[in-house]
Length: 157
Image (cartoon, rainbow, N blue to C red):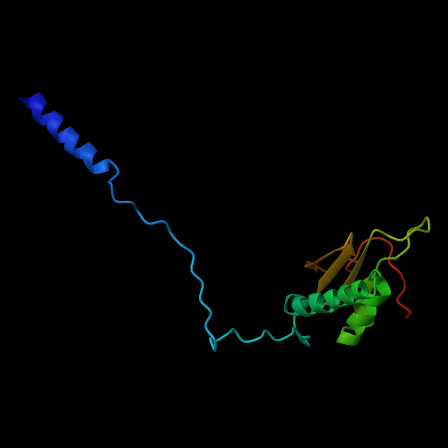
């Protein structure tokens, strides 16, 4: 008798786990176009933060440098050190606080990538452009008082 009760209980439990004849509706995608729906306000372009930290000014640094890259690409050319330095100077950074690596290697060919920096409040904004990619970061000022290691070119333009 105990076996019959256990068998019946097991059958009921398993019956609750089996699929039913009623199909479950599949999820569907929906799209709706709402005219006059509120949109997010446009994001203001980053601005130089005078007296701000390097971290405060990183969005502006990136914006300026991406503008140089975009303008060079539109002109079917490659962004160079002079372009980055000039744009950063025009944006309000001080040339005396900048460094840039040469555009031409020691064997006379175009450098694969260039680095450029701005010392700001004991920190450095450092950008690198090469192989069609731009990267940037904030780093501590080196013990030399500079941002870049190795050969840099004189900024006399």
